Length: 212
Image 1 (cartoon, helix red, strand yellow):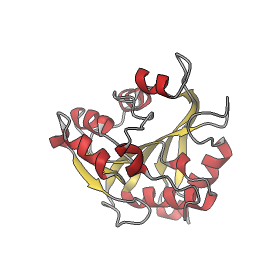
Image 2: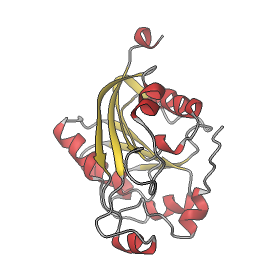
Image 3: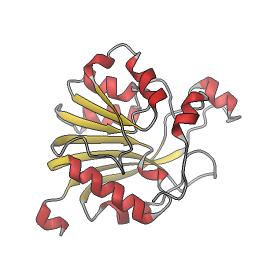
Image 4: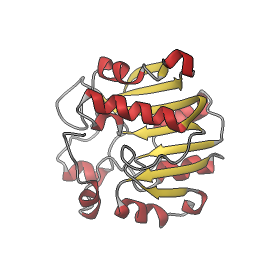
């Protein structure tokens, strides 16, 4: 399946997690509050240490959050507010899906983690299978613009070709990711203020007829 295997459990054990900025993602906050995304059942894929999941629960969402790392989930469960969420240890592509009727799915950096087009298509299809009719998916994805450092680099065509069989794209916006935590930034030797280029993509699940 994925030809660029990452041992996420080992990275969390080594406390190497520069993607964990230790505060809710600003793009997620904006899309939830400005779109707006109505509170309801939602799924976060690749939740890490649970910062965004807990913030979403505080906004009134009934949150299910999955991750492949036991260590990440233990850290999530130790945080204040974790009791509001349901955390599940799972490989999203391989394990049974957590449900077919979520109104909203969020991932930060999962879609861009697949180097192969077919794996991105499979990921998008499985997200669609988790969503209720006309459910929304918000994904934050590394961009191919800018210097070759930071998260995996994906073009706009990489994204659209993977998701459009199952999703209508509401917006695909060029942006920059939130600045890493200062200690992580210094450990990686990144300059102050470094923020990797990114895409934010808001999508709506297509009707079964439209997806065929």
